[in-house]
Image (cartoon, rainbow, N blue to C red; front, side, top):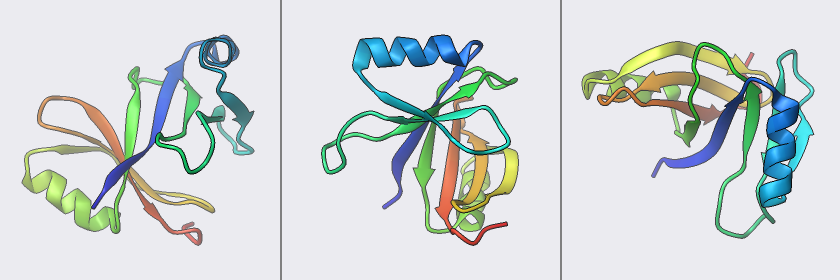
Length: 121
């Protein structure tokens, strides 16, 4: 069953956001070595309930975004469209991670879907 597996917090000042979440919640934040401003967030020990996520420089999508793990981005894009949702960012490769797409539900809420595929290019 598809589950929420990642969150993204947008930030105008990523360093300020990192300090906030480290100070308030004790989260560990590490810069992801990628050509974008993206910091991976670990919210607790592996094996305990919860998910990890990221802090990203704010773009034109100024909301927290949950990512849902799916077995096939293509299949779930079709399901999303059939159910009245929209695709805001088409299927995109995240090298070393998998396939990714940004979508919007029928209430206007942004979410992402991700298919694990380490060989995605």
